[in-house]
Image (cartoon, rainbow over all chains, first blue to last red):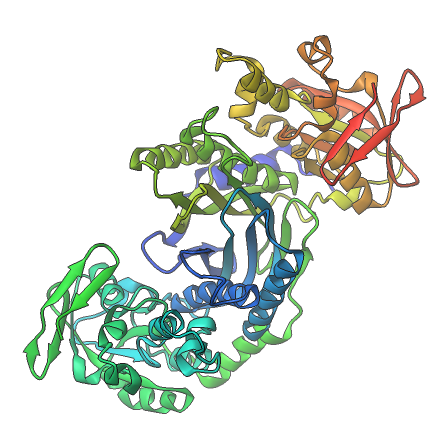
Length: 320
Length: 320
C-alpha cells in the first residue's frame, strides 16, 4: 500500500506546520499532550544508587517496584491512568545477573498492580553508577488534567495518608541495625505504593482542582503548587497527619520536609466536603488548610504563624 | 464536570480488561502501540559518559544532539515521525552549569531539525557518571510499521550512506592529536544525524519491508534483522559502501562491525529498484545483497563465502 506524494506531503505538513498541542509542558508532575482521540500524560523519572536508594537498605526487587511507583505516582497526579512504560537500566560491571532479574520482577509486580505494560527500553553498561530511568505514558481520565496550577482561591487543601512515614523509615534504617522490614515506616520507605484506591475515589467524584504527589516534602511541594497557581496556602500544624511515633520522637520536621511520601496533595471546593468524606472509606484523608490570595505557604500552630526557614532548594526546616 | 460512577467504572474497565494493543513490543528499534486515532512508536535510548561518548572528543553540545539523534533514528527506523521527547539528565557533582546549558542547546538544535518537541523529564545528581537518557514518541507514517521482522524471501537488501565512517572517525580521534573537527569521519562520529531526506524518499515510495538503523555494526544488526524475520541474508563485500580512506588503511572491519553508523538498513522488493534509483537523488544508497531461506548472514567476497567469526555479543571480526 503506497502513499501518493501528495498524501505524504500532506501528512508531513501536518507534523511540520501545526503548533504542537502541548496542553501542559514542563513544571508539573508530567506533560499533557492532545493527540487524536485522547489526551495523554508523559512522565520520566529516574532513580540513582546512593542518591535515591541504597542497596544496603533495599534490594533490587524493591528498587524495581519503586522505579515504577514513582512514575505511576506522577501519572496519577496529573489525573491520568498509566498505560505503558519503558526503562533504561544503567548497570555497572560488578552487578550480578540475578540482581537485574530481581529488578525486572519488582517492576513487573508493580506494573501488574497498576495494569501498566512494559514495552521497551535500553540496557547500558556504566562505569560506576547503577541507575533505573523509567518513562511512562498515561491517558487522562477526563477532559481536564489536574495540574499544580489549578488551585483556586477559597479551595480547601487535602492530603492523603500520613506525612513523613518514608523519611522516618529511612532514619530508622540508618540508626538501627536490626529494624524489622515489617515496621510500618520501613515498609513505606521500601515500598512507596501510591494510594490508588483513594485516588480513584477522588477522581470518580471529580474532587481535586490542583493535584500533585508529595515527593520532596509537604512544604516544598505545596509551595511549588502555590507558585504555579499564583496563590497562597494557609495550613494548620494541628491538622497535619503526623504519625504518633514521629511526634513522640519529636521528628515532626520529617513530616513537613521529609521526601518520598508519595501521598497526594490536592485542593478542592468546600462544597465537595461531603463527597470527600465518602472517599475516606478508601483510606486516610486530612484537610490541612485553605487557599487564599497571595503567595507562598503559611504554617500556623496554636493560632500563631510559624517561621519557616528555607534551607536551599529542596530543604526546609521549621522551628517547632 | 463530574463522571458518574458507571462512567468511571466503564472507563476503568476499558483499561483493565482489554488486551493492551501492543503491535510490536521489545526486540525492535521501538515499540508500536495502537491508540485511539493512530499508531504510535515509543523508544528510549541512553548515552553514558566513557561508554557512549568521551568528553575529551565531544563537548556537551554534541552529546545533546547525539542523544536526540539516536532516538530519532530509532523512531524513523520503525517507519514513524518523531513528535515529543523527554530527557533524564544524570549529572555528577563536578559538572558546570554552562555544560548543561550547552547540552540543552544541542538537544534543541537536533530537535528543531526533526521538529520534535521537548516536553519534560528529570534532572538528577549522580555520584560519578554523567548520562543522558531520552524517551521519544512518534506517529506511524502508514498503517504498518517497518519492523526488523518484515524481511521477505527474495527481497533485496539496501543500506543508506557509507559504512564505518563513525567508527573510523573515533579511531582517528584516538590516534591523532590534531585531527580536524571538519574531517568527514570525525564529523560523522560527532554528529550522527540520521539521513532524513533519504528516509522520506524511502517512506514516500513505500519501499522498505524490514527497516532498522545500524547502531552496533552492519553484521550484528543484519543478523538481528534476519533472526527476527527468520530468514538468511547473503551480502557481497564488493557492493558494500566502504569509504576509500578506510580501504586504504585496511580498516574494512570498521565498516562491517564498527558501531554508531546510524545509517538505515532495509529490505525491499526487486520491483521497486526503479523507485529506489529515484530516491538516490537524496543521498547514497547501495544494494548489498538479498534475503533467502535459512538463517544468519553470509558474506561473499570474490564469489567465495567468508568466515565470519563472532566475538561475543556485540563484536564480529572477519578475516579479509
